[in-house]
Length: 284
Image 1 (cartoon, one colour):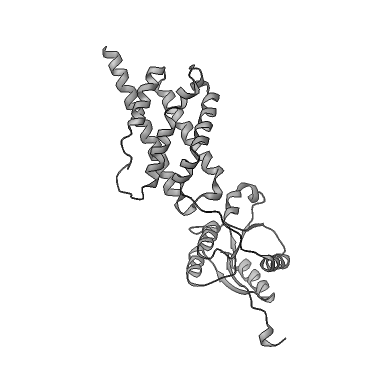
Image 2 (tube, helix red, strand yellow):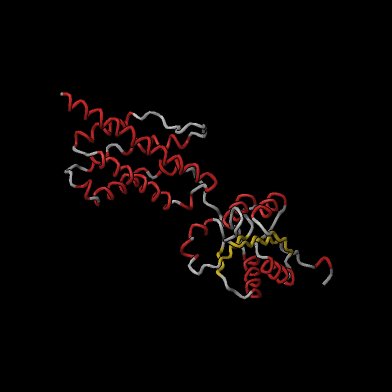
């Protein structure tokens, strides 16, 4: 075979904090024609991803230093979306316990495995790989707006299953009338990119205050208000779990923190409205 006929070697970024494993896999990959760049930490891998181009990533999932294989895979997916991404894990149940990672990684390989066969597996993946069409990523607030009806229905189903809430003979409309506005307020808060050093960036919510006043008239107790607020958070997070393939993971953590803060603020304002009517009733 002439030099012009030599196949182009696939460039692989190999990330593992275990020197022995990294060396063994690197040597085997190179013997099979791969061009290997090794990284012993997440930090080193991230630097490589931002400065070099790769055809494939092979990363250990669990590493002791800050970050893990998911961090590396996410960075590779955003920086070089056409690269093959493989995660290696020593946990037998990882494929079910960490299903969300499959949204970013192409495969999860469970240890132990025979290195030679693994390298052949990588070669076959590279030869048959076709860039997959990626679903558009959405901010949490956009997902909540799109799934508003599902959130209301999911919340109602949970509320009806609660003995603490369901004993009051309310219609579905009476139970859920407050929800659309509260979720819309939450989605609006999530759409605001500004952040401050304040304890909370929540805004006054007339809808939350009115909800507290109405719940007093309907026969609620303060504990019931807290319980239905907790159900709202559970329902929201369940909605996000059902939309993992659409989530923008790079913004997920701050958005989740905002959800917790906003729902807590809404509950506080509902309690204020509830107590306002309570005091008026006591003074009458």
